Image (tube, rainbow, N blue to C red; front, side, top):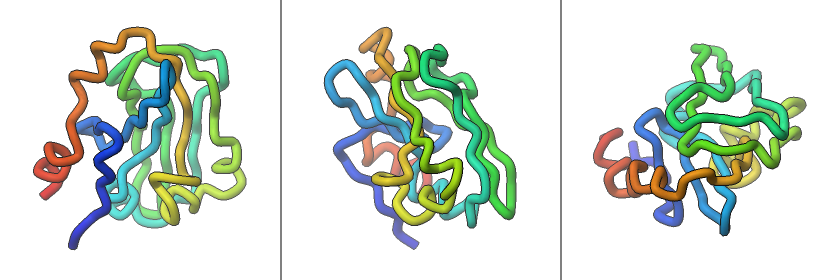
Length: 127
């Protein structure tokens, strides 16, 4: 089965994506990850203003199959949270790269982006 992996963003080995917009990174999970999880029923996210650290858990995603931690692709302060997911967690399944985004982080250290995978590298990892 093939999965959508847009090449305008970078990926964590733990299946989160990072889309840079200036000094901010928008974060969500990959198409592969949402497919593996199955129907998402709950998402727990940090509050705006909290700090997250690269490769450390920032939240939890729960599906009918599993409960999984969500890992930050970069360190920084949470500047936005997709509160729509609290009432409609299925948006993660329906549009993981669009309406199913999870949070935005003000980048602390740009060099952390160099540690993330390109779309091709991520696609090779999940193949």
